[in-house]
Length: 348
Image (cartoon, rainbow, N blue to C red; front, side, top):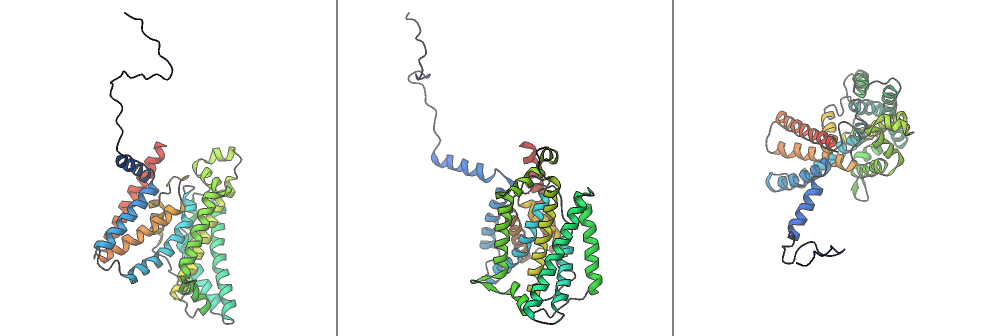
């Protein structure tokens, strides 16, 4: 018998006539690629669910597609998206900011008080907006110092400031709203820029700026690193305390911006402004894919989560479902998404 031939480089290892590997049809390959990308993160799954649910609601929920209803939902999205963007920064460190609703209320009533003292409407508007921003940033500074210097857990520190400043807003006004705000201030929540409603314009700017900071700056890289591992970040020379401090500044500042828009649109300073929004804010951040343990998240995901909550609230309400049932359904969704986020983190 002839000696076996040595294997030559480049020669086929399959005997002639052996079956070649079967190639999958292009359509099957494309579907697999789409599935791999769509379900590769909680953020993308939330986006996919939002698109599907929105289309289903348009087709099957009576009055959902009404232009007036869609416009109302868009306005509601503005408030929730801006506030949720601020909360996303705190969540990136595995924390939470309960003081958001207190910032909404206190800045609303004190800003309204300043704007009703009498004088030039434009000057009063500038002073009122400055006061509202100062209150939001000031409470953010207080929260940041308490967490970084006193090493107090964020949920305790911000719960304390929530109780203190929400109570202060109620005491200062005796639960009475403050009306008679100057017209230039009312234009912030009711006017338009280049045909776009002012609140929508502000929301787009907020989303763009916060997304840029979180995903395209050195501070953003620090935020992701600190949220993933404090000790490793400290060893690497990252200013951990300053980074954590900045998170509460973002949260407080954006809460103040939300208060400006909401107060302007309502036309009055209200001591209970945004009192029931906290759970929706937290829900939007979690549903948007931000990890409850920190180190993972995105502004686009948060905006999607906020929009999904508004659409859920609206569509289920139009179907005649009781409010407590809607809240329960949102709670189930938040729990499932949080569980997916934890499992995804454990598998990385």
